[in-house]
Image (cartoon, rainbow, N blue to C red):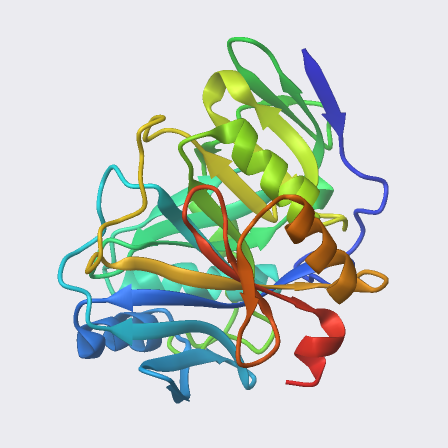
Length: 314
């Protein structure tokens, strides 16, 4: 049995400020740009920004969170490696309530879920790309136990909980107040994690831990899932599962889904250290136009990794 307690540094909620690794934009290939804009802008509440190459950038407060690239020929593949879901994290319980209300009023199918360390709802865009909208609640989480036949959470009151429970919608919506459900997403929203389908879980964990620099939080091998933190107080910054099996392969060209995602690493001599780790792992990489290290993980996911000093100057 593996027993993990909440890190003692877990103080701030809904902020990546204590993390060593944060996210830039997630780039998505979509079939119909107009249809996807209607979802990500008008339903979710992201604000459209400038063109980004062949894509359209959307975000909050001048920060790009998602870039939509038209030209895909078909929706998400159901047995591919690649993105399971991306997650936009909300800054407080009122904004999470506003997102829930917005989706309810718009009659968008969603799955409100309680993970103890977070409250979330899940939905799909028109091409089948899964999105999680989430509120971090680490103050509710005490520890996790990984048994051969089950994963058990303990909340801050010491109660035994399942890692996935139905969300108490009435309690969550009680924080709505007089907020306008149809206002854009708040400035404090950010990409808080991605969750990946991978064919080989140990290999994927080793790559994101030893090469990129995430911290292993919970390895749930019997359940085909692993969870890594970014060195801060929140446990769930990148997750991966092998639920599509060992033969899962990257989507064939023309399939909607994640084109790439951007990571920003803040550590001493980050750029040199990253390049050295990538070279030691034998991973092919190159510098992109912004100076980021562009590489592909063992499952075929494309990543652009920048040092924090590079990102701030771009």
